[in-house]
Image 1 (cartoon, rainbow, N blue to C red):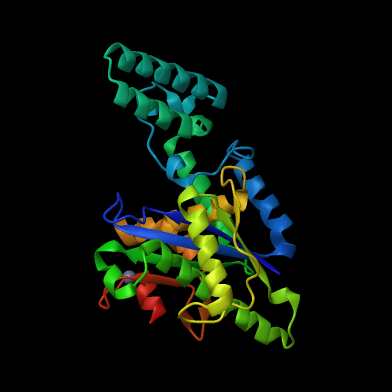
Image 2 (image 1 turned 90 degrees about the vertical axis):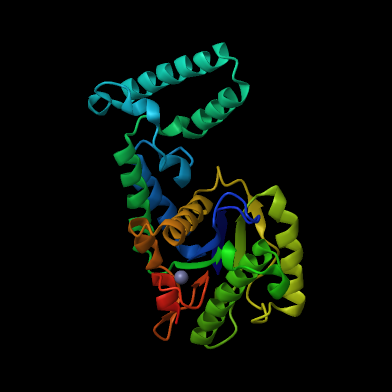
Length: 300
Ligand SMILES: [Zn+2]
């Protein structure tokens, strides 16, 4: 049996705040879960993050106040945390004095999101993300599925679906096709080729994806019947579920590649994309036919 952890990157609204919307699913056989979880904890332990949420976008940001603290890199973790806390408190008090409530609110929110990571320099945070990606890359039994939608190329009148619906249908179809291949390899019908979806709990999508999954169970997707994925998605709090955080890392890496051409993190996780007959079938870039990106080239 397989667990497929699902998370997104970017906004599905048009235009929203990103040019792309990415929905990614990372699948592992349940028998590997314990080993995978332990390996990620070991990697994160090297960075003092073993008990913290792995939130890639917040780790990958620059924290301006760090660059203003003299000798920050030479300090130990406790001293770095204290120095950043002091700088942040001072900044919040300044914003309060200037009576700038929106800037104050924004700064407070940013600081809360990155509070667990302030003992690491920017380079160390990036190294931690890369180390996690490299660990995922070694999991020969893991498969990555994703739909990366270029919103400038998307026409809802033609697809009859919203961006979020198309992304979910594509990921489900690609995952089901993988499970069908696993089932064929096993030879006889087996519970070994069944799967459950574990989804980041997002109020906006929980109801929609549950309803869509019920439809898929009855009628299939546009591309395939859905025989091997059982139940509707289980929605979990991603801040508490490590494997959903890994799906978030993969979705982030894919979006940064299709939006900005950032290849480093992308190539580390792209190796886990499902492949069949020499083609990468697990990940699609929904863009113009002439797109020459590595996803499109590997998909043709
Ligand atoms: Zn492309």
